[in-house]
Length: 150
Image (cartoon, rainbow, N blue to C red):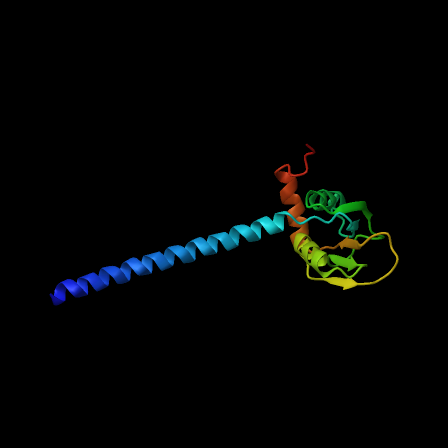
């Protein structure tokens, strides 16, 4: 009788453990799916951006313009900075919007940003610098025809 009871307890224990693991996996998958959806649905209808190329990579400002427009930022201006010797990518936040600034830091692969409150028509100005990560990303996206207009 003792053998059957311990066997029954072991079976019940492993069955319960499997149920708990299954519930944790489903809950974790649901959280991951919800995070992906919320990131993809970011919309910035009033966030205006100016992009300046300060690194010398031909067409870098234009290419970043296309990347940000695909992510629903309103890029009003892109062009060259006054020289091509800017050492790092810099984001200038003119309206103090930390959430959008954080997303721009992520897309531009930089942690350098400053807040300057003024009456500019742009909410953000991005100066592309000589950091290799953003240059590599643009070259990589060009290689796989990311910038082909549909």
